[in-house]
Image (tube, rainbow, N blue to C red; front, top):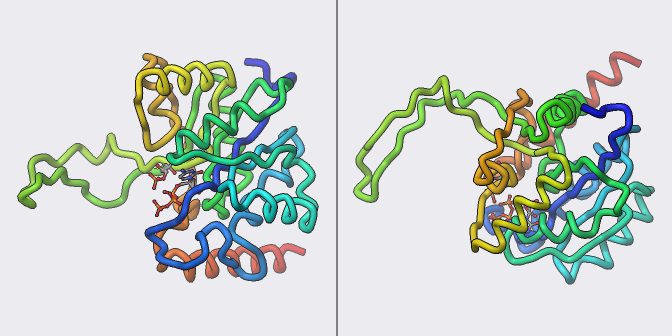
Length: 240
Ligand SMILES: Nc1ccn([C@@H]2O[C@H](COP(=O)(O)OP(=O)(O)OP(=O)(O)O)[C@@H](O)[C@H]2O)c(=O)n1
Ligand SMILES: C[C@](O)(CO)[C@H](O)COP(=O)(O)O
């Protein structure tokens, strides 16, 4: 563990199209209260003293408008705005390459998870510092079934072993680099970053997150996120 000397960078991936949201505008640019979802997300990391830099990965046609957001919202920790790839994993790989050489610990976060809390981010960072690789997750609340193509249940995994995985996902930088390089070489595509590390045989630890760290995915997520932000503002108002 090298908490004191750790130099943390964050790759925020936001190069997806948001097909399931079904809006003309890509979901990361939709307004949540007064600001684009992506700006809320970046502000979470901007506010944390022990994060040195952020690389933002966006669609190639959105690079200029995102550079303008960086200026408009004073997001000075965003040192690079890079163009992403066709799959999330490609975008992460490009973002990792764009971080400066000073970064030795990295978190990957979805640009469309604007409600992550500082407490949860810290839990993930501390988990990685102790183990090399940690992700945020919450225990699943529903009973999960495996269902075949005919719509028939084939298995009911023990719920006590099931966790819904979120971001951030945190790693020693060299480990994530090795994992993504190997995945690219093997033509392996995962739906999260941990999968690339797991296939190297390296253990990835789970740090308990919050159910409110939702990924903005479908239209009903928008009013829920508005509600959560308003509740947090009310709580802050009561404290001050
Ligand atoms: N080629 C891609 C695909 C996804 N992402 C990012 O990865 C995060 C999580 O992905 P998801 O919610 O699945 O976003 P989309 O791919 O945009 O959504 P959809 O599958 O509905 O099109 C998002 O911040 C998204 O912008 C990315 O950077 N590059
Ligand atoms: C990485 C992730 O956020 C973990 O839940 C998620 O897998 C990425 O989103 P997608 O919907 O699978 O593309």
